[in-house]
Length: 313
Image (cartoon, rainbow, N blue to C red; front, side):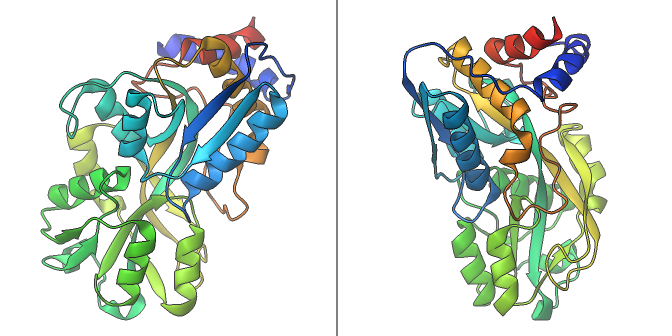
């Protein structure tokens, strides 16, 4: 979809945001949403989306499934094991184009851009780590092997020229390893604050390292898919304000998802945005009618585009 067509949809989205009429009249069916890890925003968001979709469209039975997140979610969409999946925008773009770390393109489309993820480099307050360079040669939890943060972690440290001892761990495993001094940092991509990190901070004081200084190098290698984002002071108790790197989250659809189902999901995204924000969210850029259709190089699903356009006329 061109920029002109996306712009033309904005007026329709403003109207759509106030509309919640059920419109799916197809056969009853399940809608499986591939989400993310327990304790993260992907799963919390997907569960809220499933609830709102079930309320708005009685003929759809939506459910969220815990996964290792972006890369695994793409595989599930490709293999027909999920209808929808949450994927980081940088990973989605690489998969769509067949770029590193994907050897061939994967077929999918987007329902919309749903919120901004914050890349959070977490260290212990007493760990003596004050910059990315301080992690040279040290063990770092880089995200689960099937996650988008694992892709970002590799890109970040490679572009920064900082060699580390990478450990692919789930968020819960990474938190335990950081508390036990088995790793000196963990890199996580999620909302601010992430509940599991808030809980860690109660027993093991943490801080976040600013990453915005590495944004130019990442953009030079991978384009404008990465943004500078602001973490407000006290998002985690004792942590001051800082700037880090953000990336959009896209809600993607399997190639086989019918147009009428995609349209139903699009209507719920726009009409129930306020109901899709996890309770812990502070300062996170969630659904906004101005950014919902901003899916970059990934095209909108025809059903979603039709739903947005219908309100525009």
